[in-house]
Length: 477
Image (cartoon, rainbow, N blue to C red):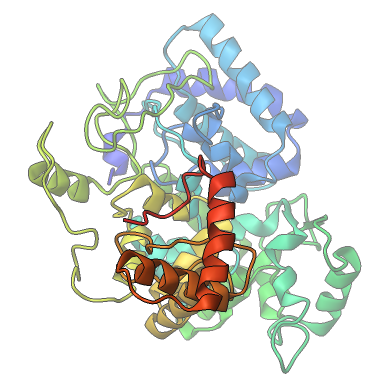
């Protein structure tokens, strides 16, 4: 993980990019600005401009990840124009990653926050995947999961609370919080931690099944202020991940402090943004400076070797795990490795826990975390062994009923590796089919043959002459 020391400040570069961006800011919608703050910096690959890369037919990029669905195309278009002007003035100097860092700062300042210094010198990453947006905290996260995620990025509890204040501007889709409004549990209709009047207001804006847009901070949706924290004090946090900040004494104390002292909130927010903007930064010979904001190669399908022209290994795979697999599987080898190293001989949810830390062995494994819905199921099963085993058993029963032959369909083989002798396809009763087989065997042994069997045998021979070319007839020898 990078630190702020990894990025060298470049006053000329900062001023040049900042001047052009400030000229464009009046045209930026508030929803674009807040998502610059909340989405562009905190990602799997760090602050490397990967959100700006377009998807291809072979790859869904970050901008098409579900958490970024409220980022308007206009925002990307404005960033494209900023990049074009910068390239015209000084080609190959200002990276897309730096543009995002400057723009996040200037967007905050434009709507009432403080103008903080942003170190420059980042380079652009070459990988962009939609499933990387899963590193963003979902709106359903409770405090424990939120804290764990922020700490894993090198951010403190205070940073987490301050950065959550970015929800003071911008919009959200109803689907991100509708679970708090309808059928919250068997006992209550709405989340009891949500103010009843606010819940009723939200139900009016978000009828069942709709996905409308609502302001995240209704009292001042176009102002970067501490209204967000004041709303939390009266149970008017929009997301579960907002209101959960009041669930513990430590974070609740910070919320109260920020609600009373707007200057303190803005100062802490700026410091946290600088800190977050240094996560996973590419500098020196790492990465590149893109000429436009949509350059990227298509991914190949070899996770360990020659994944792309730019990356040897699939970037969605944990680096340590990839190194371990390369040792076990040198090029052109076909060795055997366990699919679930932590517990290869135990039927448990370890597989799902591996996926949460990018240790899925196959592409078809790790892709389960590539969409919001399947990733939520993975997290659920990873934390609940009994639920996993119960769901697995139910799915096995369901799958075991697919294409089943019963009644007069099929047969019961005497030997599982070959179909029965006398594989009869008569439109007759199963009793007649049995008699045919019996009569045939007796006839071959020159034994006495039951007359009813001979009748069926006659029918069988007539049918056999008509079906002589049918490959489904069993071998009678």
